Image 1 (cartoon, chains in turn red, brown, cyan, orange):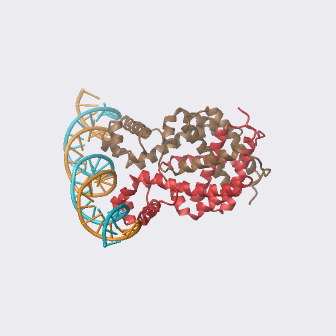
Image 2 (tube, helix red, strand yellow; image 1 turned 45 degrees about the horizontal axis):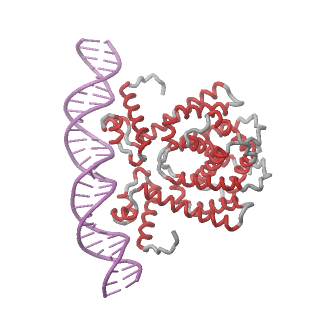
Image 3 (tube, protein in one colour; image 1 turned 180 degrees about the vertical axis):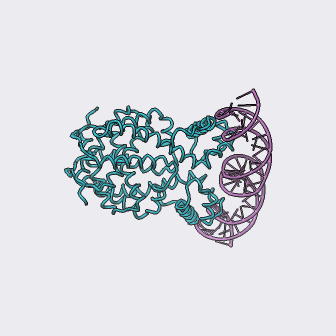
Length: 202
Length: 202
DNA sequence: TTATTATACTACAATGTGTCTATTAGGTTC
DNA sequence: GAACCTAATAGACACATTGTAGTATAATAA
């Protein structure tokens, strides 16, 4: 979808109003309590106008997610074309985190707010507690480095770790600079990568 | 809260009906579309009866989350009292994954279903793609082991990785046994732990 | 200017919410 | 068994939300 279609400025304005109003509301009340009524009221548009743009709230969320991923992809692709290989992944990470930090209001409500199922948060807390207490009375350490872990599991592990760490970082109002966090993430991830290298078919 | 209060069997029955109906519905339709009406209808109870137990759907979710965490805590605490230290964390992990596998229908809809904000899923996918393509043209590998990463970041990283991996595992309908997955998670996590050990104040 | 189109406005039926009241039915206790 | 307690049911209510009409108005594009 190139930039040529030249969208009506009124459309852009309305969509921006809706988006801002929604993010605004999400800072105050839970997603379940957000209605088209409230969004329209906050956005100072007619309720019917909302339906001219989105079928319902879930679809609007989809569209917002599309936009978000689009923006990040722009960054990622830009870096990948520019300086390939080597520290590519590292500068991608830095740029990504800086982008998130710049739009932290958006990302915080979208990624890190009390979404709905508290389930993730609860489980997360449980693991945090476990790991915390575990790391206190640490006595043994494994000599089982360089083991082959199935690729998909390693990818699940790394991806979840990245996203989850960023979410925690946002929730804590970004206590580290994007650069520093990127460095730590790179370290933690590379260490995992070492074990992936052998890649023996298990 | 001891078991002594002896709850009315009718209450237990109704709560179970509500819970089953809700999980049932969550397999079919999105959370936003689930109403008290539908739950009551599916549970074959009167709509008013729902309000005798929960104030609204979000509160019901909270209660269900409480129950879930309670069950997991039972497992964790049981293991911790039984065989302390050594492979403690490993048997905790195995028991936890087995418990999740046994109640996979519940956990799948609660943790791994298309909850609401597709945002997490999208970002997750982006990272999976990145890591996948990255691991294909892997040329360099870091010699920067045993670096000190701030404790909170390491905890964020590990906790997110654990939960996220389990979620992916559930979404793929558990292609590995709980025992095997627990082993892989232990490996990945211990490798990270190695770097945590120095714990120099940054 | 003229044609197009997004938005505003009003209205409507349908559904959902939360909370009453009164009644029925199941469970517990003596 | 009878008496008591309380859950669940049933019907009703005011109110909010939804999704979709039809028409009018204003902004944009040609």
